[in-house]
Length: 627
Image (cartoon, rainbow, N blue to C red; front, side, top):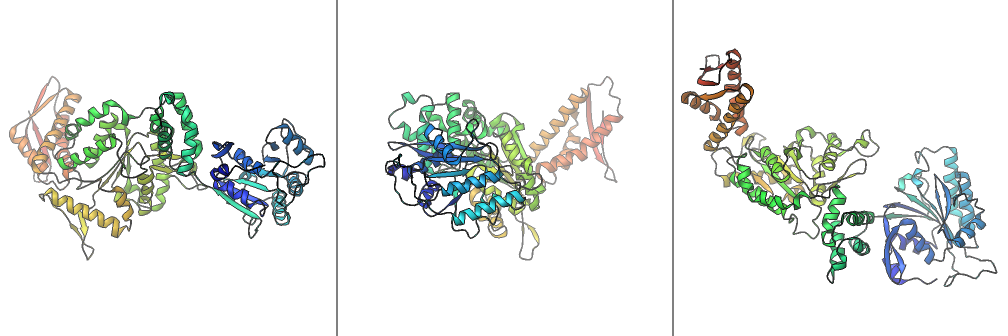
């Protein structure tokens, strides 16, 4: 049987290694991406993605093998392929008693079959032990029968010899069959090489390990061409469309197995996605949602008025809002990471909000959520101070396989799978353990995380927001904490010093400059609250109090000018804690005494209450006078 040189070149690396090593190896341990599809020759230079056993058989068939026996622990042994000649020959050579094409078999019987197969002279044949990872409960805690089985298999690997087929006199050799000696091999199909006893292949030169990795770009391009007809409008596609489609499909599925391409094409076929919408099809496969909010026409209209919308809730941060809107526009236009050859899996947007406390960093993240997704509940918040210890990373990302709770997944990965279109806020990120921060490298670069269950969470449709107080205070040479920027400093000074302190923190304290490099120029620095802005924030908070009194008690609340001015002076006198500090002062110096005064006042028949005075006695107790 002649070999097709093009087919040999295009087959996977593990398959080429198998064909090359058949004359010198008696057993093969095949592990890794074993449940994927693989490019398999159809003849005339054509390739198609096919399951492993079909690809494996194409390799063995070119080596003039007559059949392959496949064993799995549930059903037993079956001949492959299923044509009459192969089945008849396998039954005759090994006395198989097939029931519905399968023969149930114990480990002891399988051991005898292995022995007979390696000695067979009448035809080249091989045995594939499928689901070999499930042959035992634990590979290094074997019972007597399991130990005897693997010992016999190890002994067989050592003593087996290459054979030259000697077909019966009335049966000629296969066309092109050479008479060079080759092993009749045993192939173990495993999730991981460690799923076999640790001693099995130790110092055994007759056992070869073949690891199957994820497909490379060129392999995905070749596979993508075969799925082109499943996409809509291909009958009207211009010349060269298939090549463009294959390249886009391969780039969008970076890091995925070929089965992902097949599943994506099936989804596209059912939903009528056109060939030039392959990115939408891949996004649908990853996050499980056919509608993409990022590509809805109404979103551009919202973003056009984003600055005005944001400044209604985040006051006095013109520079930060402007930069945030620029990054948001880039995200909406799908240009995040456009400078890289393959940036399609990266998050839609990455923002690092830095600045003093209480200036609107968290509020801006909530506003972005409402602006883009129309629902503030699409906002996912993680307080990184809860992850100051390294072991708490298991909560966020899921425990490693085998550890208690690994089957539950991680809080972050579960939340993103549930809400793939969301704003994910990592609050006070500098308080997390550095080992946990390392996980953000994978999110920022590849847009994905795999939890302890092996499930992938895709971040490609999220906006990631990090908040931090880094740069406001720094440590001097003696380790003393000093303020780096002050209220009243020009914004340019605040921005330069905060960015410099953030760079120093990641480069020299954490020794992780790569995290800073992934964040890039997406650091948005917030300024201190200036007195005119503080007055606006105070007025807005006071309006909220008035509205709440109206809703709860059907009362209109107004103020005497002197009382209002005194209250404002108290609340905005110290802006060190920003807007949050204004709210805290308002609560302690007005809301609490107001509640006390209203509680003691007979409200029956009243429609209006006037605050005539707010005062503080010598014990610093504030009281409100009502009329």
